[in-house]
Length: 450
Image (tube, rainbow, N blue to C red; front, side, top):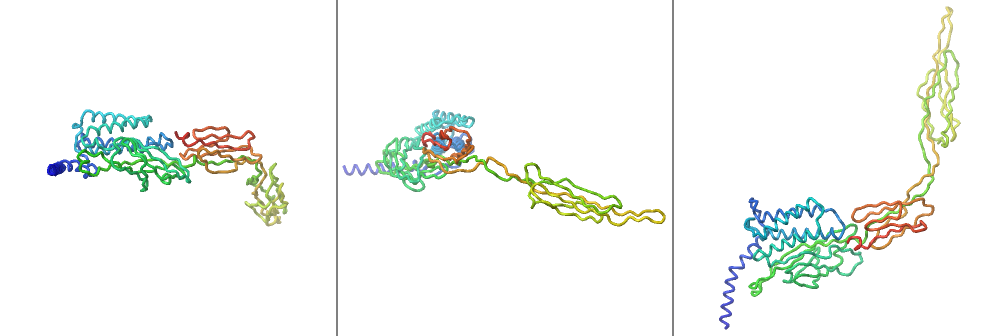
């Protein structure tokens, strides 16, 4: 009996030498080789489809919602699954594929094309294409033993910085029961709680999912294992590892921030710069010196800042002497000068007359006027953060004539309200019956994002 057992082990070892290298040759090859130029190469078809899914993932709008997070997660899982599928199909042409396999690529191409041209892509749509990819694995010898990940939950985690309870991450799929699966976020390992063929449950430290001001994608590395063949199990070979990238979005403990301002009537000084027209005077010939005075009065309702008065001589002739502003008050001032001719007027014996040079002055003044005015001014009352699910109350100052409430959400959206009540998908704003307090009512995070 012992001799027969030894003979069986030798036979199994011989068969292993023939079978095992064939299975592991592709695994040791690493990433798929650069696809041949033939357009019908199956690996190239798969790669093109994967790149199209990656492009859709990158082009998704930053939708902060459960649906948006799940859609990103599913597209990422689909892209990874297509990469594995392309690896399994390396070396085959599109013509080598069975009808069921070709049908998958036809349907998947049509789905991706429709997603590109419309906004109707849903989580269910992506999950159906993902399930179709896994169906193709069933038709590939050896690949049917590969573990399959269809989703991970929760798609997002809202935590307060003080949270100590672990985050339970559930990975769903099929053929997940082999080996000891692991999940790591940022190099930190989660604790395995439950392990079944269709589900793996991990408990992860809350500190792995902290976000401060905006949602943050936390990338986990899930290691699961291929189901071993009967021969591999008999020989106690280590199962072949298979890695998936699992994304869970960390949501900040705040809905956003707010700033409340009140409209108050304030007294302030309004100022304006003014300039007089050009004043001028010219003497006649042979006229004696003459004092010229021009008067400036303030504009009704305004007062003159006497320190701002500047007199500018624009032109003068003869023996003219200008004079700075005088009699300066808030209601007016005067300026001018002594205008005198130069030379003399003389009559000669022959009746001729020599005339003098006429004196002249041209000047103007600039000055500033001011007046007190009452204006409505928007003054900041308070600003701060809005926790999910907790009302924020802000008292308004006495004698407020109005208000403005500005809310900035963590998804970048901004709302400004000056009439209340106001309702939005994530929050509402109200004014107490006495009109003395602004109240911001944020929804619970699940109610807002789900």
